[in-house]
Amino acid sequence: MACAGPVERGDAAWAAGDMTGAVEAWQQAELDATRVQRLARALVRLDRLDEAEVALETVPPDARGAEGQLVEGLLHLHRGAPEAALAAFEAGLLLDELPELWVNRCLLGAGARPEALGWCREATQRAPEDPRAQLGLAASALSLGAPDVALAALDRAAPLVEDDVELRAWSAQLRAGAGDPVGACDEGARAGVVSIEVAACCVEAGRPDDAEGALRGLGGAEAAALRLRLAVDRAEGAPPGGPRAPLIAAAERLAADPALPATPAALTDQGRLAMLQGASAEAEALWRRALAEDPTLSAPRLNLANALAARGLLPEALAALEGDAPEILAERGRILEASGQLPEARAVTEAALTGCLEAGHDPCVAELSWRLAHLDARGGDRAALAAHLTRAVAAGGAPLADRVRSDPTFQPWVHDPEISGILIGAR
Image 1 (tube, one colour):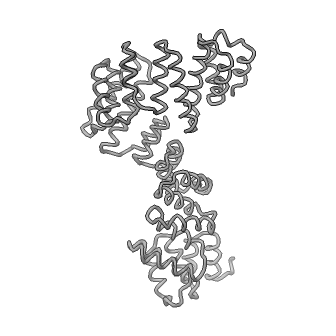
Image 2 (cartoon, one colour):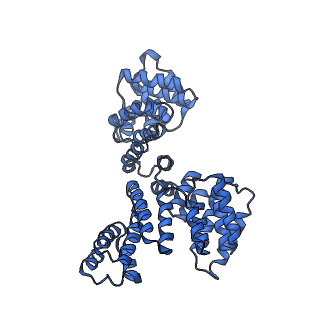
Image 3 (cartoon, one colour):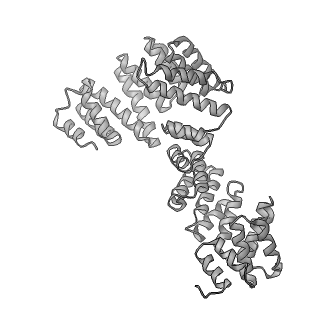
């Protein structure tokens, strides 16, 4: 390549994906119209838009090919003229089915135009190695209320994104919108995303350090509420006594933040903090306020029922557990078992398990199968015990098997050959 001229050097750099090298070489040469348009395209990729526009203007409009239309469309986008950009992309597609034209038309409409779903599906076929097409398809699917389609597209995009921070950040936001908190937190942490939505996903995924990272530098009501939740989670998870005291104090400081909103979620976390402070009456009042504002929330309902049950007020606790969400039914079953109402406990726990199975939520399946096995062990139903333990250890693995072995209720059964085999087979 040492003897090659600037045109050849530019061509080689372009082929290698070296936009800077291509521009430097081509700008030293007399170029034909095709290469001038490619030069303008390279300048756009380098975000040198003014230079790209000047280069493109040297090619008469009627002499521009697909690459020229692509550059024109991208320049229109940067000027805030999406309709003109769309017209340029579609004019380019009439000249040559350049993959980047398909992708950019997809991105232009993603999440904003119903027809973009079709555009993005086409783009994924025309540019299968371009993750932007899959991300655009995910955004379009989400806007049309199809999270399953969005998640499938995001899974296809994942191995293509590699280390592109901007695309990972977009993927994180899309996964948050599609209801994939673990995936959103994973992508957000890798990209260093600062976002309320990603922070909330990390909280839901049980990853407080990543949640704190996603909140760094953010102010406002939503950030204040999430910081309080993280602080209360940490305090609840600490051993009682000395180690817990400074964590409670930290949560108290956050609870005093004037930015903290009086939303049902924030009231719920303030109630949890009040319980840690030993103020059970205040906690119950806060949870009742949260439920008065949003009766559909499970968290304040569960907290209130637990508090009432701890005081021995089992009828009141059961009355607080209105609704048929699996977590509500599961707690009803726990309280009914604690009160000795075993047939009733079994019925509502089985209903809760059905809901968890339909949702495909393994931790919930493991816990509720364990509870049903607990009821079976108490009632002496060996066949049901074996069936429920099999499902429990399949979902919960070795930790759940260890839990069974250490529970006094199961001790009469752990040496039974069939039961013992189920526990030994746990992985």
